[in-house]
Length: 112
Length: 117
Image (cartoon, rainbow over all chains, first blue to last red; front, side, top):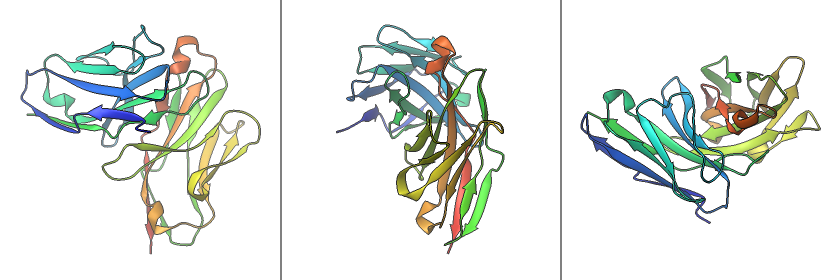
C-alpha cells in the first residue's frame, strides 16, 4: 500500500522557471492538501481540495496554482519560481470528516 | 479562524523520564485534535487523535494525550522517554463546524524533542 506518493523528491530551479509537483494517493480519500514547511514556521496550508472537482486557497496561496486532476491526483504548479518558494512541500490526504491526514515523503525545492 | 500554539520550540528530557509536549488550540466550534511526529528528512506520521469521548487518548509508540476543554489544551505525554523518541512533534486542529473550512487542518510550529541518554 503506497499511501501518498510525491514526485520529485528533490528539485533545483532557477528564478523564473516553472514546474509542477505531482501527488497521488491510493486510499480513495476525498480530500487532498498541499503544505509547505519552513524552519520555525511549522506547516502552512497552500491549497486544498475538499473533494474531486473543487479547490480552495489556504493560508499562503500566492505564487501557486493547483489542479485536482481526478480523485487520486492533486498537483501543485509554480508558474514563475522565486527564492522565497524555497521550501519542503508536502502533499496530504484525508477521508472527509474525522480522519487523520496521511502525508507524502515531501519534495525539497530550492530556487536559486 | 482556528489556530494552534506549541509554546516550546525545544524540549529536553532524560531517557527513562516522563515527557510532555504542550499544545493549546483555538477554534470557533468543537475541535478535532491530532499529534504527528516527523523524523529527519521524512514526512509526518500520525500518532493519535481526539474526536470525542474519553479525554485521555492513547496512540502509537506508547504516546498518549490529554484533552482539556476548559484550558483548550491537548498535551502529548509518554511515561518513559526513549532516545528513539527524539524527533519533531506537531499538534494540529480541525474545527468540526466551520463549513468548508472544516477541511482545513491547522498545524502548530512544532516542538523538537531531544531525549538524552
